[in-house]
Structures are given as C-alpha cells and as structure tokens.
Image 1 (cartoon, helix red, strand yellow):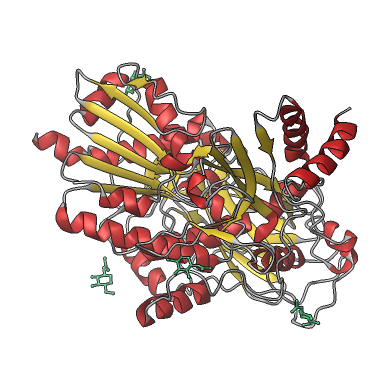
Image 2: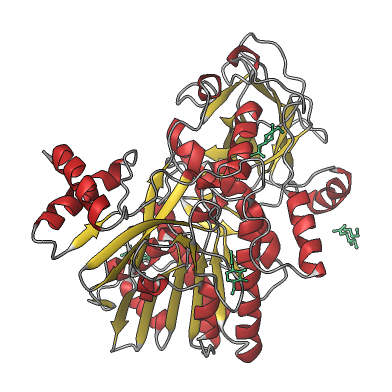
Length: 576
Ligand SMILES: *[C@@H]1O[C@H](CO)[C@@H](O)[C@H](O)[C@H]1NC(C)=O
Ligand SMILES: *[C@@H]1O[C@H](CO)[C@@H](O)[C@H](O)[C@H]1NC(C)=O
Ligand SMILES: *[C@@H]1O[C@H](CO)[C@@H](O)[C@H](O)[C@H]1NC(C)=O
Ligand SMILES: *[C@@H]1O[C@H](CO)[C@@H](O)[C@H](O)[C@H]1NC(C)=O
C-alpha cells in the first residue's frame, strides 16, 4: 500500500511543490520514513515529514584522499608532526604492482607456524629474560610468503596463574615475524599468535580507509514548525551535486557538512545520527580475504612446543639483566600485565583495588569527574554508577546510550558526568544542541585539584584517513594544554583503543587494524604530556576473555582500578 501511495504522492508533490521530494530507495532504514512521510502528507497536508535526501547517496571522487583539503591548514610544525606520525604507522604490504591475488597466494594461518627460539643466554628460562618466537607465514598452498604486512597479535599467558602479557610483533618484511615477550612471572607461559588479517586483507582495508570514508554515513533532521526534512551529512561531501550546510567549528575549523534541505534553512538542524553502513564494498575476490574462522583472527600453531616454564631469578641475575639489555636488538615494553587476573602496571603506578563502594566514594570525595568520548568511556560511567549505589544518576531525559548523563553523590560531594564527543559519532540521534566537540568542552572547564577529565576518542574515526584523527587529537591536545596551563593540578586520563570482535562485515568498518593505527597515533601524540594513560589495547590483548568493543566486566574493573589508582595513588592516601 505504501508503494502505491508513494507513487501517487510523488506525482502530486512534484506538481504542487515543484519537485522537492526525493526518496532514498536504497537505504533500508530510511524507507519507512518515506512511507510515513506520504501517509502524513495525506493527513490534510498538515505535516510534511519527508525524507529529503538526495536521490542517491553522494558519489565521491574516490581518486582523491578524502577531505584532505578541508579544515584549517596545519602549521609547518603540525605538518611535520603529521609526517612523523604517518611515517611511524607506515604498514608494509604486498608489492606495489600486486594484482588482486587469488586466495591461494595469500597468508593462511593454518599453513603458517611459529617456533619458540631457545634462550641465547642459558638453557632455562628465568624471570627478566626475553622470549622470542619466530613466525613463518605461508600461503594456502603451504608456500612461504616473501613479503610482510600480515597483522598478527601475540600474547604470552598462563591460564593457571591468571597471567597474560601483550607481545611485541616485529615484521621482518619477508614473510617472517618475531614475537617478543618479557618474562614477568614464575611458572608456565604459553605463546599465542593470532593472524587478525592477511597482508592482502590489510591492503584492502587501507584502500577503503583512504578512498571510501563514506562507508559509514550520517544524517540530520531539520525541522521548523510542521516541516521536517532529513539530509545526508559527513565530514566532507561532494559539493558539486547539491548545496551544503556548513557546520564547520569556527574556532578550530573542524569540518562538518550536511546537504542543505530543500526548503528549510541550515539553522533548523535539530539532530545528528548515524545514517548507515554502505554495503558491497568489496569485489568477490576481495571478499575471500575476510572470512570468519578462515583468515580473520585465527590462531597460528607452533611447530614444536608452545609453552615454556619460567624460573625465579638467580642471585646474580641483576647484572645479567643489565648486560642482556645492551645486547637485545628489540626490547618489548608492555605497559603492564595480568597476574591472578589483576592488572599490574609497569609504568611506576601502584595498582590499588577498588572493589568496595565505600573505598570508591572515599577516593572520589569532592571530585568532579568529566568523561568525554565514545561508548567505551560511557561504559566506565555505567560501571561506576552500578558499582557505587551512592552515586545516583539524575534523569536528564537524555536518549538512551547517547547522553549527556550525570550522577551525583551529595554526601561525598561527587559529580560524575558523561558527554559524547562531536561528529563523526555513530550514535543514534544526538540533539544538535548537545553536539559538542571535546576541545570546546575542555575550554569551558576551570579545572583544579578536584577536577578529573577522562577521554576516550577512537572508535568513530576508524572509517576516516588517519589525518582526520590527527587533526582532531591536535585540537584536543591544545585544549588540554590550555587547561593544564590554567589549572596544572587537573588530572587528565586518556583511555586508549581496545580490540574488538571481528567478522567479515565489522572488519571493513571497525577492524582492529584501524584501531591499532589510531591507538599508535594517540599514544604518540600525548607522550610526554602531563596526562595519564589507561592502556585499553594491552589490557584487552593480554586478557583471556574474548575481544569485544565493550570489554567484559572483568577487564573494565581492572581499567577502573587503574583510573582510580591514578586519582587516588597509594602514597597520596597515606600522607593524608
Ligand atoms: C581516477 O583515476 C583513474 C586512473 O588513475 C582515471 O581513469 C579516472 O578518470 C579517475 N577518476 C576521476 C573521477 O578522476
Ligand atoms: C565552511 O566554513 C568554514 C569556516 O567559516 C570555511 O573556512 C570553509 O571554507 C567553509 N566550507 C565551504 C565548503 O565553503
Ligand atoms: C647497569 O648498567 C649501567 C650503565 O649501562 C651501570 O651504570 C649500572 O651500574 C649497571 N648496573 C648493574 C647492576 O650492573
Ligand atoms: C576487596 O579486597 C580486599 C583486599 O583485597 C578483600 O579483603 C575484600 O574481601 C574484598 N571485598 C570484596 C567485596 O570483594
């Protein structure tokens, strides 16, 4: 019935309102809106609720790196830093003139093997030694690969001890990889190597990132009185096809655009939402590179033993460790490891355990905790208010899962706030009035010894070229420097990216490979600054529980312990 109505109405509207309605036929989520629109129009034309998206989604010139020309021009120093950062995440891949390979010539985790190398220094393994495993990648025909670029994860763990640590993977660019681990506990240690994506698959992901950043698209609703229209939005839109509304942040030049509604003005935008995910991004041949259980996150077997036993240090080991430090070509520096399922940071922070609500309220007494970012920090907000009943959420009538959210404990004078970061954000319906950039929010904080700022910005940037992320972090970093300049005692904690569950589809938008690239940039850009890091990447990699965009409670608990150990360090609480 809707279909008939829609035809009829289209004709009618075309005649009476000179063709201002266009239906977006190929977007499933918007189809129902159109039906709604037409039915509504029939109700005495009191309400024209039409989905005025262009006939199709915009077609981008996919030869150009997306939006490179948009936003403020970086200063020479910024440009230099950007070069350095992009250099540092440069990823090797198949030879340049590589024709799309057949699956048979690509990396096959089942045909690949790793070997634990024997200890250079002595026969047995002791704490403080370094363990190295060599991985030989082979293709589906069992032939050795001759170039690098496979995305491998390495973990050393002991289920018996609840222990685990992330390994460092070195790509020798000839089909061979080293996975290097520090030995941090006494007892058994198993090596686990996982192929996340073959180098051929990473090449596809890289191409998508540079040329198809429209693969997640956004939309906004415009409304005035009875009129409402919806258009497509993104960080950049081809302007040759329709006129644009320019929502670029005036201060930083962070770009954001929507197609201009046909009737309404740009200032009638009332919300922002995820539009959807483009499908059919891959050729049939490319699709074979992304198969769950075949070449996405599949473990690689050992050619011999996959475990060792680690002994306590010998009495004279301190000196030995010193000498081995000089001879090791690479030295993994994990930020921490699990032991008895508890995270033990290696950066000097002493981990405290905040397992009782009274301890948490004592720690957070008189604090204002401002959380900004994606849903992975919203998860912290939710964890805290669940764990600590005294911190009660106030009903701000915010949309579920979107916010902003606020919780208070008036007895202990605690205020906990969460707000999502600015676009690109793939949340369902954020009101325009609540759509704020983190850097602008930070400029609105007085800061001080009672202010805690917690940031998590990564998951929604994976579909864009890394330059977009660098630019955003640069603006946030400047705002943080201003904040720490006016209130040096403000505590700033950054939550890094984490691993997530991947299947063929999710990989194209949210692959861990994208996250790893962003995470490397994030850590580099805040290194040396007076901000603290919760290394969600290593905390999710080292743990035995399955990877998930929103990590399981056991991991979040460790993250919160880490956060609160920063807020209330051991020494501070003793001297008080
Ligand atoms: C993109 O590049 C290809 C070859 O490099 C060229 O043939 C094509 O015309 C270009 N497309 C556009 C829209 O510029
Ligand atoms: C959007 O507005 C910004 C800031 O005023 C400006 O620099 C930019 O050129 C505008 N974009 C377009 C496409 O006109
Ligand atoms: C370790 O090496 C450094 C210099 O490389 C030296 O100053 C230090 O004394 C050494 N420590 C031990 C325990 O040998
Ligand atoms: C919290 O941890 C302390 C010390 O580790 C322990 O004694 C206590 O029983 C724990 N409380 C809960 C509720 O698990």
